[in-house]
Length: 263
Image (cartoon, rainbow, N blue to C red; front, top):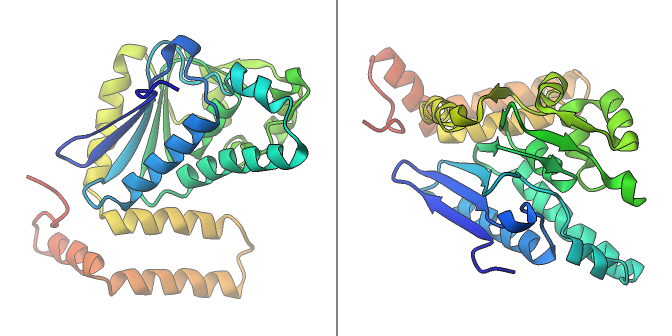
């Protein structure tokens, strides 16, 4: 793999941009790239200077999914080797999905297979109106297994039953309708749209945003019962008593900016 297959840049505001940089093969990934991306995401999560992570790609495609060379190698794997390989991709998706910092996917072109999984794992997804999407695994006699929890959560079981089986390509408008992406813009507006979302996120408490992401995961996975009610009450009680919670309320009442807002 090219040493520059992944590029990372963090600006002075704490915005880390992780770029897949294999444009010659449409940013397809293999086991080495998967491990590198997982490692880099975990490093960014542990870096206190990083406030959020943008996931981008070089060239005309976002990601074509699995690299052909990797697929050729997998064809000769044993079941145990295939399991270990699949768990590597599962670790990448889980790491991205559960990252304790906001994640924003900027989709400028085609996203196929695992590329769709990357989009579904991000908190916010912005796409060019010319972007396209495809869950193409069944064309190869495979299934989109390890990305399925995140894609089904994004587009719902009914749409997943269609696109998981049909492997049809769908356009950005359909991706927006299904909820896979949040905003559709002209390609030349992607940067400005990302900047607008960045500015909105930077106004918010970092710990509160992490807690908000965890809250969504909790309340979407169970019934509204006594345990759920007590859990949510406990979460707001804890964050009210936190240093960030006290600072946020105090700064609002005192009509000043909280400490996490620069400038």
